[in-house]
Image (cartoon, rainbow, N blue to C red; front, side):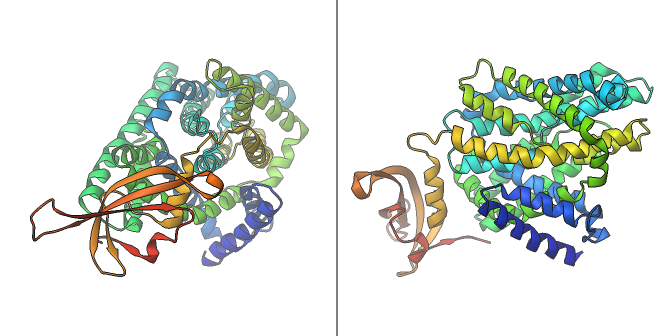
Length: 486
């Protein structure tokens, strides 16, 4: 398995570099590496690696969803809330209807089998959409109207809704009695419990991190460990109660961000570094799940069914955005962003075949083909359209994030030591300011106020100093180091 990991790292990074040089998304190259190295083409990966592939993919998905949670501001969620809820169900319903309209005739399957296929195809892929939205958020693209946040929230709930519909249709095919209303009732219950099981540990972690000043890597590992436990909790409780654990993962970051933005940003920066490796694992292993031979059997008819489904889905997405402040181009971007399929299709595409559905092989073939067609093309479409359509804003606040990352600046409440004098100071104020730079252009700056307690004179006494940091100043760690307890 160690050799397989090295293969994923070396070939994945190489493909990422080549595709970025060609102005294409690096994740497309990683998907292709996975397809070629997987068991269905050149079979370069060890069987042990394929056995633990699902666990690795889940951990990678948890990393990016945690990052998403640490970027979700409450005011932005309020602005996009209604549209996010509509987008979480309406596009999938339209796509299922479109597949049911044409699949029975073109693929020679029953209407119920077409509904099962439509439910599999109806899920957008958070593995593709979320990383790209995080990238846009990091660069301040679409921040003014909260478009990346809208797509993050909607795509996370979309999967919950579609999997419940898939369960209903599969149960109906088995001939057993299925309480449709009870199953549909699981959707809000699953969402509410998912958020609850994330909010509680999120608040506990916030209190823990404010009480103990641990190093950022240790904080990040603790958050990641708790998030993994949440996904285990979903599996352990699925017989009794549904829990949308991936929403809980995002809720952890959301609560910490709301309670302490400095701590949230520090953890988010560390997760950004972890994501470099997690991204390789996720996309290469998703590609390795794709059986090209099965997809080939879907042929032209399968391709046409997928395209009709996407056409109906696009109509549903556009309707979901009616009444929002988004203009025509921004709505088109959202339509494109809702195209990629990968994660859910790879996870449940073979379930109907295993459950004894007569057209299980056809359903699996079309599911695999949808990954091959929509994951790379959707990712390319998102990046190209996003760069042309999403605004930067007049003075993007995300420039301050780049400035913080460059300097490695401390946050309020943290302690720092002067490298020249050895004195220890506490950060008591941090403020974002716009400074006059070269040619009188405004550039982002961060004002930090330091306080050194004078224990001899009594509590709350001492000296304060202030420094302003801009992109033209030397790095913070040239003169200071941040102190942690552990």
